[in-house]
Image (cartoon, rainbow, N blue to C red):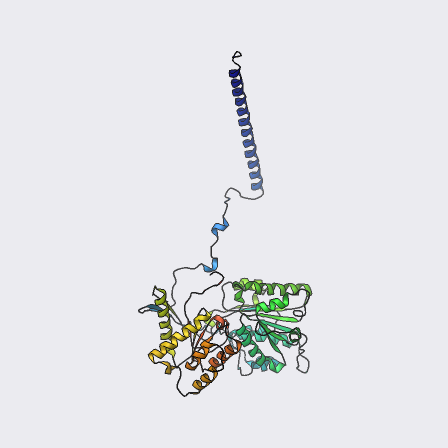
Length: 488
């Protein structure tokens, strides 16, 4: 072997490799043993500490999350209420759901007469005999308490009067002995989501609070308010974005230091894209109360929403001042019809929808007013003209407008004054449109003409659905597809 050095070298390398492998194997064994002992010791310590590790599992939370959020979870099966029935037509199917029976009065429940309110507050309810059921239940909390308040009730339940009771409570704290109000000591902010709703509330509160010498002002994109005007106004009605801007300035507290009452109408908007603005307003107000110790009462008003307790926690409302009423408390029972258009092609589906809208309008033509909601501004004029043309074709326009009647003359005269071309075209026929893209004068004119029953059929976007009070016997929602420009 020594005579052949290359073989000697190879053998030496093999022996060295075997020794290294043995050493590595032994080292790995020792490390595994040490790890097992450490794990066993840790397990004994954990059990001794009362922790149970044997059944641990790793959860992938991203995998468990619903891609579109839990609010879209729904059961595909549904049970219709008693008394419901179906109708099958050529291009659509109808489901009729009867109105819920009003809930009977509980033992000891009674309506509060206006005469039972403090004498100084009664002028605000001029023309009312008593509060309704919901207002009567909330009267104690709204009018005689400083605690935060949340009311969830169906549309038309009289939430505005509850807001008025809270404003009256604030006014009552600043009365002089002679009954006049110390107008420089407080401000009430009423936040509403839409310009049209803000406008309506300003008109309502101006009239109702006039006996107290209270100034009501509007702050929206349509109506600016200087600092001097703000300081001279006691009740400010505004949109969330506008109040967010004026209350955001850190160095200047002039806008918020005298605010003693903040009313948030349609607070279910917290779930909407504009929710963060409302959230910021609430958080900023609560922080300011903690820092300055100036009292500011929060009042939330909402349609019925499922997680009202979460909203109450957010507003720091105590359980005894949280009020929730379901649809059985509606002052006006609501009968519903669901119509599913069965046409597959888009053009035929569009035509079928217009035919259904025409049929439903004709059921009430001349008897009661009809409000039709569509999902875009352009669609208001498009649908209105389609229905008007159908009436001309079938010679049924006389059902809406009687030739020579006072309404006909009024509408023809007003049509000459309006700026919107579609509205100018439709008004003489007793039809009108309403959306946020119209100028303020046109919108106000349409609301007034509809309220005075001169307009029989009104086509609108969701602007009116946010709470503008217009008297309509029948409401039609045309289509369920909404274009969202952010998502495309």
